[in-house]
Image (cartoon, rainbow over the protein chains, first blue to last red):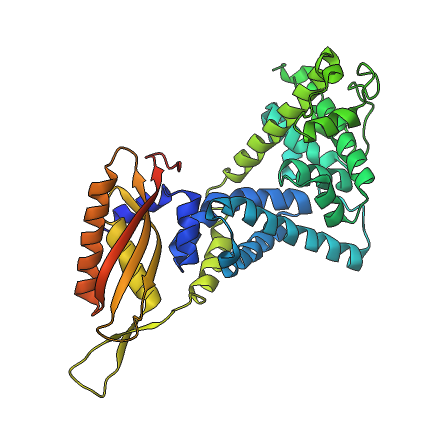
Length: 188
Length: 212
């Protein structure tokens, strides 16, 4: 039983095991965590930011913070949620900076390659339709929806993050849901 | 799923406009979408008989739940489209964190030449302990603590490890084998005097990678 087997078996380790090892300074364990959860968080932050390129920086920065503060993590089993929160916070920081510098609150993401004819054919899948439909939402609605549904934020947390009153968050969320439901029905 | 030409392609909707909706807002048996949305976010508690007994409300709630599932699946799928898409930032991340590993205390190693001072880092010794367990088979090591004064030669120390055991293996046997391997690895590579090795099996894993 050599090194090769140990590398393979580590990929089967639970998040809790990997987080414990990472806290002990095991970089390989942290690498497996990054490979296991990083891609999803990168896609999430790209959607939140409306920028595929910036999302790489955001997840890298967030995982680096995670590595440096892993000793603060109360329960190693919660590492995924914990990292997701750091990613979300970092993405929102960027949105804030963008607002200050560019003052383009209603900034829209550039048309994605998903609108190419080939993609439209593929988008017959309902989930792709929902995913694409998110891009058609006004930014504030999209952000509220992603923070609620993908990051699991409470209304209060969404309001704090985006600088919006809770009543506004509730309204934006329900409008986003209504729109997405309509889109989903079109693909049924 | 409808045939392709019976549905509108997504490009037909201007990006910023919210089109008139077939999903009703305020005629859901006296409930609004916002109420239902809030109710869903409260995980449908406390139970609202008026909402739960309305077919229209239940349909809207089912749709919103389906939406959550779909978007999660879509996100997962998007993230798996290109397996190498994340290599660049992960490589960059690893370069940085490898330079930041905390070495910990120095574990002295004697040498015939008294002018030479040799030491292993605590991090290296922990790595050794982990490798001894990982290469056993059926065990994935977790935490490793070196308890005691490892910086003074001859001082007895206690090694404490946690490990995850493959489903179906006996915990007692595995712990014994683990102790043996750790002791032998430390004996071979260090001069630490190991008093006890405490093994805690704190997790069971399945072959497909899911934890307990």
